[in-house]
Length: 490
Image 1 (tube, helix red, strand yellow):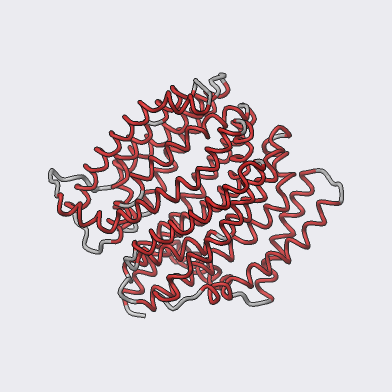
Image 2: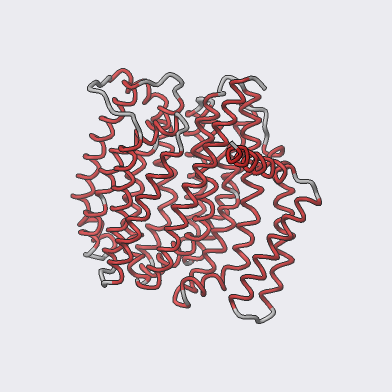
């Protein structure tokens, strides 16, 4: 392996470690806070936030997608590129905030909930804040300085946690959740500006913006299609059913999403810049994509199937009996998220190879299929809507792999062959630990025994069957421990 490849490998592994530490720290704090707030607040409060979050999440796409990815993908992006995107983002975000401010009464009328007007107007401030940090985030990702994310994200999360809990305890209801989100975004942005050296220069190039837009607009449209589709279920549930139904649906998503975000977002943010560096070497891109799929699937499948088994006692212990209706949704989302590593790695490979046109076409095809499925089930209840997402996810992860058969000579059958041992071992683990829940023990005993047994079975199986992803992860851990030992000796 030459020096450039060795250096890229070191930067990629270091980036993954810092990104994973940042995600685990932030999401760990968020999860603890969410458990506390779930005990203090009513499901309806969460339902109200979920209703307006649909519109903010879709608006956020204009800042987080397209141009940011274009800056990362462009090999020779300079200060003029970054500054042009920075000023453009501020202009776009101001326009989006104005539109949401004016539209908020109509959105509240759509949901037949007048109080949403003020909630949406205040919470939309996060869009303006995002415009000030998006280019900083792109700079950090491009140069793989993921240690910066660790401090900014944790700082915002801790401050937001304190404010959210204090306000909830004082009886502020839904406004505790609003304040928590705004403070999180604000402190995250401030710390990034303090720790990242990049600053916009007093220059703007429309030509550079057009060049970046030629790549980024396809990713932007793809992200808008994807985000709108992913949130349309919440829109339907909030409008056709009740805010409590929406709260149970979203709460079921939260725990598996916490696990997946820690793993998948870490790999996602590091993989695109790493693959972009190697975009002219197809074999290297294939090798890195394959490793990402295998390693993340090895970790993801036992976690998700394990959560399916422990969903009920875990929900009772953490959130109390009032959230027990969220359990079926939690189990469905576990299966949905289990397929995420294959989707993420395939899509990042397509982006890194500069084929944003294929990326956009894929999104349009997938979402058309998804909307067709949704149209058949939306009147059959919230559970049917959740199941439709699982069906769509299975179809989508197959479609996402198709372009890479030609781009990388890495077909879906080859990918399935790579991950099948992990799915099989995780399923075997599930079959062995599920009967423990039928013994009638209390929730704490059941949970502890199932978790411990599951870990032992999966690791023992990995060693017995000599799964290469286990050996790969173990070698990384040994390397880190050896490096730490050498540092201490010095």
